[in-house]
Image (cartoon, rainbow, N blue to C red; front, side, top):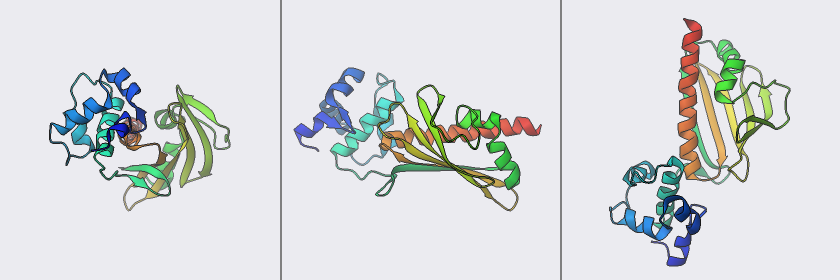
Length: 208
């Protein structure tokens, strides 16, 4: 376990902050999970061990991450070059060109971006409450790249959305790197997986 002085800040969160949000400090949560023999568990398993009184998914992820850091566990999804990252993808029953047209349509952009923006609009924009985005690369028929900056993150991350042709379908891929920590990685993995589900649902409506 981490030394006592280190318990007062884990996962980038101070003891005061975690105590203010959950009613308990880091020392309590580290001891709580340790008593449940959680040393060998992965992030999602640790999250499930926490009591229902910690209702916020974000705080559940942070507490689990803090426990792993205190135990000196290896952090997954992290690279030296780009920090934490995730990638999700889904096949769509469309040609590559049709999938690209769908991706950049106003209805689809509202789902995955928050609002539609023009290909030549390279200024930072508030696309939804608490989120700014800036288009930095737009390659028609292939991919686009944005700086993705939620207000709660200190630094922007990078989101790349790509369409890849397949034999009978095309794959829509979201790759998000430069994420601030593992909790953000888990959050964005769930977010983009849900987005792909919504996009597939919208496409199904369009095709009927």
